[in-house]
Amino acid sequence: MDSASESRRPERFPAGWSFGIGTLPHPKDPIALMRICERIIKGRKENVLALAHHNADLDAVASCLIIKWLFPWVRIGSYKSISQAGRMLLSSLGESMEVDPDTGSAELLLIIDSSSPSQVSDGDISSWKEYIVIDHHQDNVNWVGNVYRDEKRSACVEIMLQMAMMSGMSLTREIAIAGMAGITADTGRFRFAKAEDMAIISFLVEGSGVSIEDVLSTIEGDEYFDISKKIAVLKSLKRVRYQRVQDQIVATSTVGSFESAAARGLLVVGCDVVFIGSQKDSEMRVSARAKPHIIRAGMNLGKFMEEVGRMIGAEGGGHDAAAGLNGKGRVDRVLETCATEFSKALRAALDKDEGTMEPEEEAQREEG
Ligand SMILES: [Mn+2]
Image 1 (cartoon, rainbow, N blue to C red):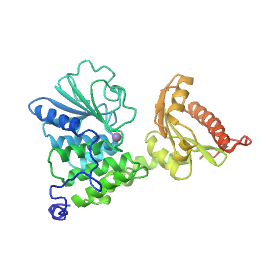
Image 2 (image 1 turned 60 degrees about the vertical axis):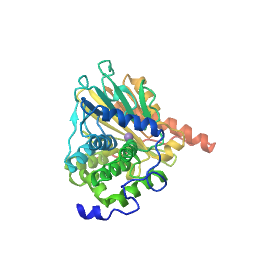
Image 3 (image 1 turned 90 degrees about the horizontal axis):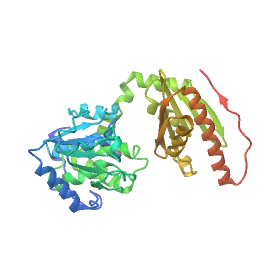
Image 4 (image 1 turned 30 degrees about the vertical axis):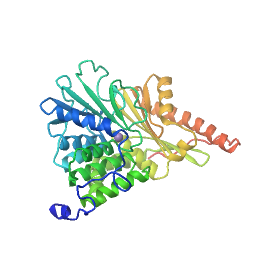
């Protein structure tokens, strides 16, 4: 889309923005957010760096981009790596982002979408001169100092949109695409979206002329064109092993890479909980995903993976429906432990719901 879409901008957003129902929700703390904008503006002759978390996802990349468009002197970067989807968004917008930028030289760091120092550093931030955290995670309690946290926002990029509006920047096609990409990703493609998120999307679509398809094709393009990802998902289907717990399927499989794409694939075809492993020499890694009804039954994958990690001497943790584990060892054994222990716990949780005991289900196999 080009200037043609500009002319479609509705007149009721003469400045391109407005706070309120159907547009942008009011900032949690407008004064604090304005102060952050002022601090960045004061730093226009300084070395200012917006830093996103390890393997920066769409929300983190989109948030950094909006900051950069708002305040062009801000450098943007990501700790260690940028996710595949994040890289696709960058290339589709003709933008780039530094990987592992030098943080010691920055006079001001803006920490984006990161709930703890370990997500943006090796844990030692003593060389940082000044930093401001802008985040939306509920568990963001690990920072000391200047933190702007709005846990009501489904995506960090929604806070950046509020900053853009406050700063008087007009809504551009690029801002709309970045905003929609961040929200689409962090709401699980709208599965967990709240009315406010949909109102923001609606506002962005109406105000910019960008379509949802423009955004989805940008962020889903890898599913059409990344042949190694497609093959990884197919291999994970071929290698699946599963056990039944009442009416639920607990599955494991292995891939060489693209664990999360494989996990998503297995959930789509009918598994309720999946553990996807990969092995590189003596290092193993497991990604776990569960459907929402498993969480509602009282299960928490983050806590579960943390416990398994403790049992086998590995690092585990994450969120309730998406978690991971990594360390040394044989991934097939770890997957077996995950499936057996999770099934046991799930059975107990479901029995508690039902008040009855089901007979043990035998593990079933389907090996390709
Ligand atoms: Mn986020």
